[in-house]
Amino acid sequence: MCFKTISPVALLSIFLLHTNSADAQNYKYELGLNLGAYVYQGDLSPQRLGSFKTIRPGIGISFGKPLSNTFSVRGIFNLASLKGNEAKYSDPEYRQYRAFAFKTSVKELGVHLQYNILGNREYWPTFEPYVFAGVSAAFINTKKDYSAFDATYFGEARAAEIMTAVTVDNTERNRRTMLNLPAGLGVRYNLNNNWAVSTEANFRFGGSDYIDGFSQSVNPAKKDHFFSQNVGVAYRIGSGKTAGGGKLGCPAVN
Image 1: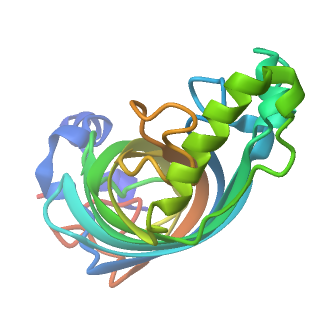
Image 2: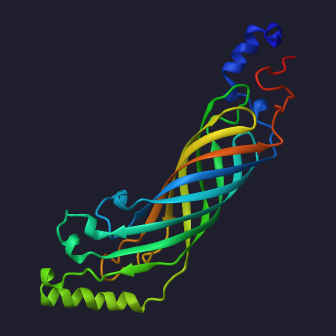
Image 3: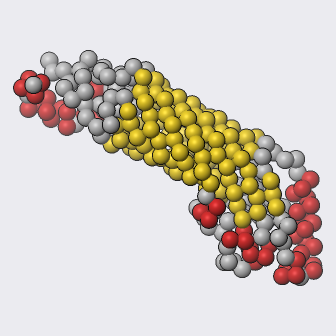
């Protein structure tokens, strides 16, 4: 067995793998598949973190390449949808009577730079926390709905003001593309040299005030955003050896 050739010093080195850049995984590319829960964050939700009552599913793929022991880059494509509906909230009360709603598909294409906090390790399955940031383009097709608006609740004058603002929103060109600055964090569990599972939170900054189709009629000072919580699986191509040539579980010791 290879353990007979490992000295106490080597064992300590294995325990402190995250400090040794020579133990970086020597894979060439990584393919990923993920499933996600997508949450709309905007004027139609009173909750700061978003509309958890209208969570929508999504699926995504990624293609990554390591740049160093700690940094990697990945291209992503996500296919999802977003939805918001004020009528689902009773606090504050007026939301049930304004009852603005929307839905849209989301096609997202982008690139992320990922920083692996502990470095890439491979001698045994291990947890790897990471953070990332990047840029993406989201292609949307918003369908807004204000047919449930109850003018009697707001009174004639206020209802007229709201509907005038809705008319202004309706004259805004339907924006189908928006640029985002995604950023987030996650954790990965390496099953072996080739396979890993992960979960990550991805927040999109920047965005547009017309994801939901409403702006002047709600809160023009506040932009709309969205985030997703994903779980995924990744397969590394060209993996199986460390930078020093050792196999999984039995690092080479000179």
